[in-house]
Image 1 (cartoon, helix red, strand yellow):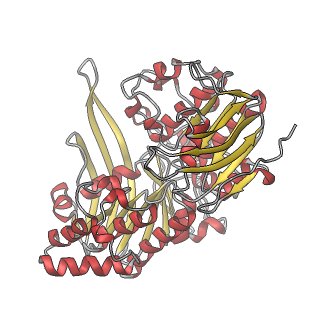
Image 2: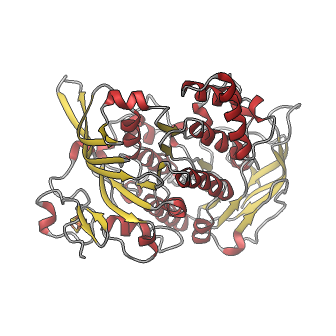
Length: 309
Length: 213
Ligand code: SF4
């Protein structure tokens, strides 16, 4: 359904001396999503996960240049096409109720999304009610304003905004931080149901634990690039291929809770070789030569020259 | 000891109580974990303990004295979102220098890069800015630290790194920590089992873990 290959995004900025600066915020990013599949995109803040969502929704700033391929349902995704598909074929589950209009009842808002997708007012209202019902929202919910919703109810309303679109591809951007574990599980299950109903779902999160609860595959982003795409079960079975993914897994409190020191390189200062080379415990001199290619190893994809089959 | 006794709080006389009858205590060098559902008033409780809010009833004492009403509060709080804790119009070096400058060793351990100093908060990622917010409180005037979902927005590696540094600081300086979190495995890592409080809605604390001497 969605294929992204070698995507790069560069921002042109002017600094004080009016010198042009090129910031490579995303370089060599790869991702694919099938219909009926839930793919988690995992990485630290600044790894490019949210920018990917912005690119897919066609809301990158005007100073961004894209290269590489993005294809959706067999046709190239140009910024114009992204904008045309946004809210109909490609929909976002927003991060918080802050994205809703505070002055309009949530029932009207969700109904409006249905109408913007071509439904007449009556059927859009019915669909809104059916969706709220399906998510066990109390009967008076449509008349509530966003600020009147509890954390759990707000999550269900936000998922509803994507459900009424009938979108083929649903993107959920960090839907869970700071939520109670029960609400997290519920939110993730709703996303899982969307995939089971045949849609493609991208779950963007910094939380591996949450990702592994529901994802089929996990794409790990680092400094604007995809370092690994693994099946969810590869984490528990020790079948990980990239040293960064392995470090991320080890650093969970329920595992070893140890960290690799240092930071992602900044887009102004990317090294010529592997982007993880300054922190990698397995680094060798070859790692500094060139960016590792994306390779298929042990049924998954990895960008590390030393990953072995 | 940091002690809260019989705390009640509401934002106005006609509004419902947000914090009801809470009593807790923690000692230097201890880590007290607090887990409770949203809407329970944990963040409000944290703000009361750090002197951001004044309790409607009850009292908070540090070594049997009330919290100072002026100057640097010895009880510091770090929230989930650093954007709200820093002045967006200041460069990072000014943000760090406000109050008590942090020790260099902690800046290094937190992975804070010297190139960040001339930037503004919006030019750093959330994880980078959170390290700045944390570095700011790692100084010898901080006696207690309230960590309110301090690493909930961060990836696992950054979370482990930050707790490594904060725990070492607390050990060395005899600083007590109250960690508010939804993450049971995290609390298992950073607290003693007897210093973990798990609450259901409508339950109040009335609990003082035994101080370790
Ligand atoms: S290419 Fe080298 S530096 Fe990069 S992840 Fe692999 S081993 Fe580490």
